[in-house]
Image (tube, rainbow, N blue to C red; front, side):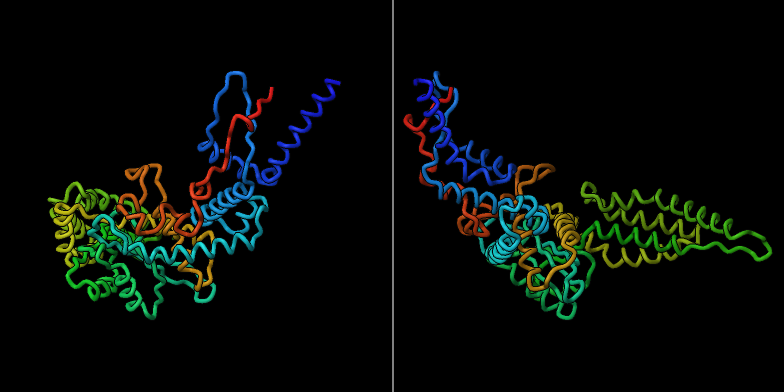
Length: 434
């Protein structure tokens, strides 16, 4: 009889624990693992010497289900805006716990909220930024083919604003974009972009006294492009009396190209040093030295003469700008390149390749969500390891109205959901299992 009563008690205890597990068992293992870690950080259990295992009973199942829903929603948004996964892939990842329609609605609402928050960002108090860095990336849409996405960032790596820039109204859209960034908390002194002539005209309408500078990386790319175009057009003149096969002629042309490229590569060190941040005090001297060496090669090899003419014209137009930019770098430590925004553009391009095409009405809000996620993303390596753009910029989170990306797009934090005790663990409801 005693054995039967003991078995009945054990069955009752198992049924109680099974009832508490019903709301958890229908979740994917990956999601349960994340939730367990979250709760393990908050649960405190009293240690008793005679008890090795404890049973924890949840007093509020609705609150627990809300926490689970919140965690899954966060994972959905992280996969969508952090990793660029499609709606169907996310649906497979969470093993059908939510429908495709729910995931799509959640992402759409969050993207709209992110667009609103991006407009608030420039009005928050933060560290003073001196530089505006601007660039464009190209995206595909279903209706209008390829469109331009303009991106504005500062030296902290904070994405300030993004805007769809159509080709017909490019100037008006650029002026509108730059005006939306300028506030009492952000009035840049320097503007850095590539060598597109439309950008300086637009920023001058907004800030007439701003210094216009150019990206050194784009300058190096331009020189390389001139080198490649000149060498690729190179040919070898052969007398008709010489009987040489076409295969042999191609080999001679390839040999000439290789030898000329080798001669040019020997003087490229002056170009690299001229655009190096470690040589700003003598940067223009190195650039002039590169131009002088290139002239000597052009006099020796007439095939390089077109390259020298292009480079001379390019340097004559921008050498004074580069010199002034180097002085500003020494005085205010401003960026010499647009690498900050190029890294952001590479993220946008990777998302565009994954998604292939977009509806234009959803395009801006979708990329605003990606930009906002990138602003809050804490890097794990590099010189900005363990920090995010909003931390480096010193954004006032109280005025911004959110502490992280998920709170900014309307997802409640776990601490707010569990502000009242989610788990009440007492000596009465802690049962040891032998």
